[in-house]
Length: 407
Ligand SMILES: Cc1cc2nc3c(=O)[nH]c(=O)nc-3n(C[C@H](O)[C@H](O)[C@H](O)COP(=O)(O)OP(=O)(O)OC[C@H]3O[C@@H](n4cnc5c(N)ncnc54)[C@H](O)[C@@H]3O)c2cc1C
Image (cartoon, rainbow, N blue to C red; front, side, top):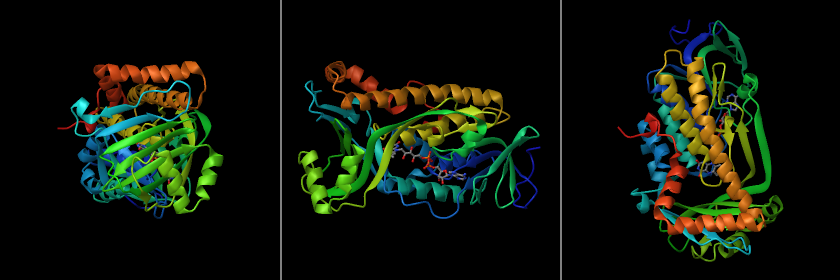
């Protein structure tokens, strides 16, 4: 039933092995992963240009390799900066302070721990990749599709009248994911009393390719190197404090930021417009069910601490591709069980780690301060342990899937 030719004719269902719903970064990467492997893919997206995204994402080596393997990294490189080290500074003001800690790429034999890349550049490069892939049919729809099961497949009816029948439907439709709701997959959500203020700025001193995380009680304030003497900023604060900061003019804002950075980047200028994001955790009860697989923020939302979100989304894509490309029916129960097993565990571990770090900053409990301080002291004292922790943060414990490896 799913072997027919691709057609755009109304009323006759378009039959494809894979449909992807959602044209964000993860959805486009998923469409390309399967399209470039020669599978026909319907990519269902909202019409019009996406809202401007001024954020950057620190992409771990495996994510960069995935973009290389999908032939889109060349389009991102000009707006990517290698991170040679990550510096953690305790500015919590608690009684027990953690020591300053430097995680260096060279200690792991790597040229970079991550590449800080403009989201807009990743988006443009993926869009160009999608447009150039003959096996991907990009379909715009203005409303949420209607889903139903029939004839062993999943049917997607669009408001414009077109129907698509797919063996596997990939939900890349974001944190509110209507497709996840249709699948009956429940989530656990926690909204934090914290907001991330995001902007970029120029500075008079060089960043030396070092990202600095200043741990404060309200949350971390992180600067991440960009090309030249510029950095991106993710400043986590209490919502009321963010409202106050947003009301400041550029000079007053840069003055406050300079103070928080203890002058480490010199004089600040050239602030770009600020964006804000309320911090949220979301974990899902299942990553897949009944011909539906969740990827990206449809499956997990983490606070922007430790650069996990998009890296996790790309890992979802790579692990799903590994499971599907080895199978006959891409939506079979075997594929979905394998995918659910590997992704749910990894996402849960990372979510718990980010959450524990975030809680340890705001908590005045001596036990938590001691644990954080001792943890960093131990890492500083035992280089092999430090390397292991860095490896875990970037790739997790399972071997990297093929799409994230060279060769
Ligand atoms: C401040 C901040 C900093 C971050 N920094 C990093 C970082 O350094 N490193 C990192 O790895 N991650 C980072 N992240 C996380 C990263 O930005 C997200 O994980 C990523 O953007 C999520 O992409 P997505 O495609 O899964 O979801 P989205 O971008 O939400 O995409 C979902 C798409 O689905 C579409 N959609 C929704 N409903 C439908 C429908 N019914 N039909 C069709 N389409 C639909 C939407 O239009 C949208 O295009 C950060 C996040 C924040 C907030």
